[in-house]
Length: 313
Length: 313
Image (cartoon, rainbow over all chains, first blue to last red; front, side, top):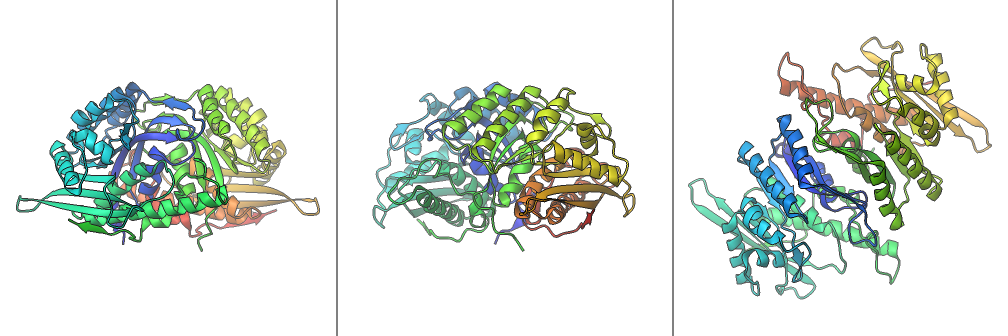
């Protein structure tokens, strides 16, 4: 059951997109974190009408300078104290570099701060952000990150290593640890699941320092049912829920991942059922119809029943 | 008993966003989402925090930028809302653009309910530019369905002073004649029956009976005064009045009891916490007085009634 005491006074700074309609970026991260009792401060890196998978989208972006101005306001009031930072999709190198500066300063203010970073760069072999972001992520962002949620493609880009087998995946996660983060979750891979092609394989690795000073490493593997639809905002929800469940289970990546992946399953399942209902028989749901059923999933967010088991490797 | 979720009830909320704290959309979104409403939100500004702190920094949305965001929603054919919610604004062109949008949304859905907090000032003086007053009076209030003025704003909009309960009833009738079928005067200087540690609020709701005749339900609520300045409480009030009038559309008494009770729980939790933080004999600071919103989730979902509304003639 949720231990409220350990979430009390836990303050997150989330720097992500805002959409008027729908659930991506901060819209995807805030409600579930707040429902779990986290105080969430949010800087909106953009304000768009909706995500870019719709036929149309319109809106405004925040510049690196404007981001700095907002941070300055927080700092002038001496409330620049956070337990977590959470970032996701970004398209602008100067913005990302300003984010790095802010995190470095916040880590000086609170050395225990945990930076949860989704290094969004692409998927299925292709980048969907400007290529110039890769060196910024690799050389500046990832070294500061404490928890990292790359997909297979992003993990390969960051380490320069291909993943063809589970052994490769483990080596890549170890390389990522060396770059900075103590917790790495490969959110999806092309590895063959032992349950067949209706499942995808995710892996996680967490380095811990024992009380006696020695290191230990927990590695896990999960087979997750695939869904026949394109969702937007699920990666943002994943990173936010991994933040929450690693906070509540700090030395137990197996349980943290089981809960995180289970929440994802419940939300996705509810969403696809609703989308198919609204679209009607034989019709593919539209992006608007496929928006995550976030508020309807409150009970699952608060107390996810575990539906996917993680295997300790 | 917790009411069934407000399935498929979509709200468009056009209010401020603050990185830290609970005013504007930060105050309205979470409680509405917790009650199951789908909330689309347009952020009229993005500030580091509210303007009661020593410092604040950020950016404002222009009327044109607001229009661009709305255009994005419209181009995707998703400009269908059950409610619109607005609050604090400082800019006449922005407010006029809001009116245009509300009018268009009402054409798209004639059943749309516009909940408007006509924020103009308090305790005898305006704290927005004076040229907003004619825009509210002549353009905004006429398209509103539910308004939540304080005594000063109600007097300003009608040109009539409130010295007695009879005056208040006349002012609410004048406001009905301007447009809204539901009026709640959120606070007044009328003498409370329960003593000077209370303040008096009043509400009035006009209905048309099936036979075409009109009836008006009027209520009086006395709420405990609190010795602190809160920011964001008016925004929370308007959002919760939206929610509880949605669940009790012909019962202003119950809607007000629930709304005022939620306010009471949130405020009590906030003031206790703020005093703990500040320490004995010290006045809490604005950061310490931020509403304890996420901690009040259970009260938001199912508020225990702590204040009774009296039906008056």
